Each structure stands twice: as C-alpha cells, then as structure tokens.
Image 1 (cartoon, rainbow, N blue to C red):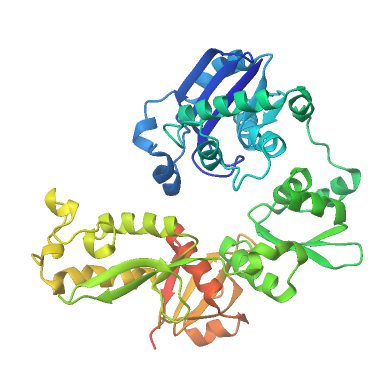
Image 2: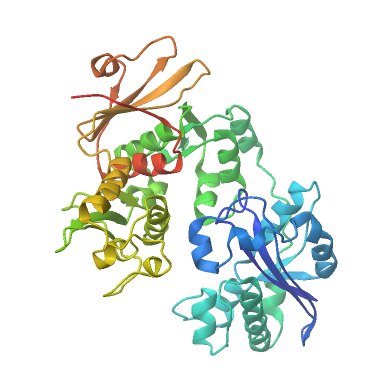
Length: 455
C-alpha cells in the first residue's frame, strides 16, 4: 500500500518552516482507496515568494486546523504504507519535523518519484514535477497546490509502476529512513563546538579549509552537515578532520566575514558561494513627465543600484510591499503594465501619478524617501548590532556609501564621532556582494540601530 502525498510549506527549510497544505492519496497499486486534503495553519508567516508561487496566504490559513489537529488523520491514512512523493526526502522530513515538534516519532518507508523517473524514464530534459508530467502527457491542474501536485504524482507513479515490468526497480528503491547515526569522530568534533552565531571553517587532516559557512547556531549547523545526505554534506563527512570557528554575535558580521573569507580562501566545497550572491537590482529613472520610476532589472555592474536582491521574485515582493507602504503607483513601479491608469487608481488606492493627476513634486518626495531609506549611497553611517558578549556591540562602518570594515566595542565605550569609531574598525573589502548583504539585512531587520554621521 502506498500513501502518495504532496506538502506545501511556508518556505524552503524543513527544520525551520511549517506546513500550509497537505494532500495524501492512499493507493493500493490499482486505484486510490482513501484520501485526505487539508489546509494547515502553520502558526508562522508564509514567505512572500511562496505566496506568489502557491496562492496560499496568511488570511486563508487563519481558520485552518493546526498540525496537531490533523496529525491523527495523517497517521491513520499512512499506517502500513510506503510514503511516495516527488522529492520524497523533503516531504518526509517535513512530516517528521512536525511530529517531532509534538513530541512524537514518525517513521515510514519512502519512495521518491524523482529517483524512480531517472531510472525508468532516462533522458528527460527536466525531472521537476511540472516539466516532467507535461513531457509525459500527464494532465495536471492546480500546480503548486498540494492536491493538484499529489494527483499528478499518483498518475506519474502509475506510469512508473507499469514501466517497472519485473517490479524490482521500485522494490529496490524503497528507503527504510533509519535514524542517522553520527560517527564517533563527528561526535568528538561537535561536542567542543558552541551554540553561538559566527563563522565556521571545516578542515581536512592536512589543515586545508574545504568549506566556510556562517550560522546563528554553529553546533546545530555542523550537526546538520554531519547528518544530511546531500552530495556536499557527504563530502564534508568523508573529509572533515577538524572544525574551527570565530564567534561574531551578529548575524550581519557573520555574513560579511563569510563572504570575504570565501573569496580569500576559495574552499573547494564553496563553489556556489564564490559567485555573486544577487542577480537583480532596483533602479530608478525619470520619465518624460518628470515622475521618478522604479524598476526591478537584472543586476548591471555599470549602473548604480538603489538596492539588490537574490532573485527577481524577491525584488518583486519588495516592490509590492513598498507600493503600499509609500503609497506609490503600480504603473510607475513596473507592477502594472498599462498605457492608462493603474489598478490601484481605479479602486482609489493610488493618487493618480499614472495619469498625471498627482503633481510629480509630491509623488517624487515619497519615492525619494524610499530611496533614502533603502540605499546608503554617499552616506557616512555606522550600523550597531549584537556583540559576542552581553556587554558588547558590533559596529559596521560605511563611509561615503562604501563599506570600510567592522569591529566590536564595549557598551561603556561611547561612540561620539567617526574618528573614534575608526580606531576600533578592522578594514574589510568593499564589493557588490557586501553591499547586497548589508542592504538585505537592513530590510529584514528594520529595528537595527543606525547612526548617521555628518560630513
């Protein structure tokens, strides 16, 4: 018996996120004999990119059952079943995490239709669910909703079972999902690590650094490296001899140090992070009617951006939010393509800059406030964040819009001017990545202290 399922979550990390929707179809090898579909209140906010992807928002889940209210039904419908999912490792671990939060262990065998498809239908351009089922002529509705994706997985699994004529490939692909056990040498490494925020360095036996990372909990993060089953973690597990670390207290300081150290050391397992960490940026221009327009576009090193984003979706989510916060026009921010008025003007939520009803001087003042808030171009400022101890703070210095370095100071040590601050700052390299790291951090941590110095 199989329990074919799909889960939608608040985001991408199984150990930090919650379930927003679940669909399970109990399949006996011939037909669906039972099903369970439900929205789930995750008791935490959904990340904006997930709202845009799935259409599930916080309001829809306000009155939905919480996970503990549907847990019994999930246990019942999956008892004596093999869990089947597209990327089963993610869905199964999400379930295990939710049950663990309730204090229960959840153990089932599992099958991954991604792995099965690669074995039974080789040569496909993509093995993502949407592209794969379209290529195979399998109809799919409600893409990125649990029920639609689970139904598509049922049809895909039927096809895979038919292709596995001797029934050995599917049988041999069933995973028992045993609890991962740490090797003794890994336990020895972890026991000496602290649960602090900072940067960590993973070394081989000859001392070579093979991986650099940052975490808000170094001990927990290294434990994940030692128990995860992805290719990078397996390489770390095989080669690690020692882990050293530097406590920073501040996540922003850890991000900046991680970025600089990766560029300096170039560890073999950090290939992905050596590249630029953002792809899109926010730019402004003045149109023929003297209104300041905003535009999310691919990052261009030849142009000065207001701020940068890891991907286009992050930029779009930012624009959507600031349109409301600063009462901006959807047309002039690129959210609503039209030659006439934007949608918000029609519902009286825009003052009419799109049809020249609002004077450009008034509209541009609000845009300039947004630009001033989200850019430190030409500013002299210091960002004050957590330190390594309770009586310490970190300081990130920006001079004339350029990140110059960071340091730590005791709370009894008053910062009165920029010259005093310079005496405690360790110089660091300024580049487009550091600008992105700082601006992204300030967007997410709006209450962080900033001191502006006059020229």
